[in-house]
Amino acid sequence: MAHGAVVSDCASNRSAADRILGLRARVAVVSSDLSWAISDTFLSSVRAGNGYVIHQDFAYCYTPWIHVLTYRLRDLLVPVQDVVRSGTVVFRARGGLESGSIGDLASADLAELGNAVAYSLNITTREKHSGIHAASVMVHIYRRDLERARARLAELRTKHLLSSFHTHVLRDELDRAQSECGDLRMPEVRE
Image (cartoon, rainbow, N blue to C red; front, side, top):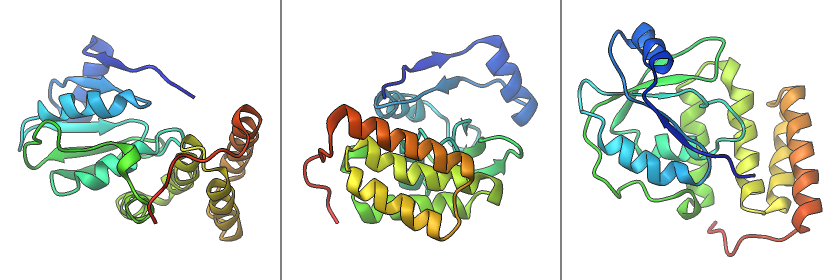
């Protein structure tokens, strides 16, 4: 599933950021594999100390790369607000990001994926946890590792960590992926 990417500096996005942070902001609305290149460019322009990053889809199950990205940048981006009744988390830039330093989602091994999810759960309220857990299944679906996605879904369901909505979405996505490509796996995922 490929989503587009939009970099926006429109008035409505700026005014939302103004209300939350009390400042004018550049806003990047990013998704899919393009997020890595755009995030790298965008985040390297965020000024340390007075720059903010707003991940409006932090708890959205279709954006698992956000968790890897924020985990990799956890020493540079400090969570400052978990926006209630939304999927949004706001971060303040503690340091500058050097362009080319974030890598990509494909380079994340299983341990890093687990650490990224644990970090995201630790910095958010419970209302976001089902979406974050669902993202931990979606990353395997995106990688076409359907066996691992099924196992993760079963584990989360057994522990009652998914809402019925996310369970339904993940089952549909697994069925869709299975029908589109069989049970193909991405090359060698490191343990």
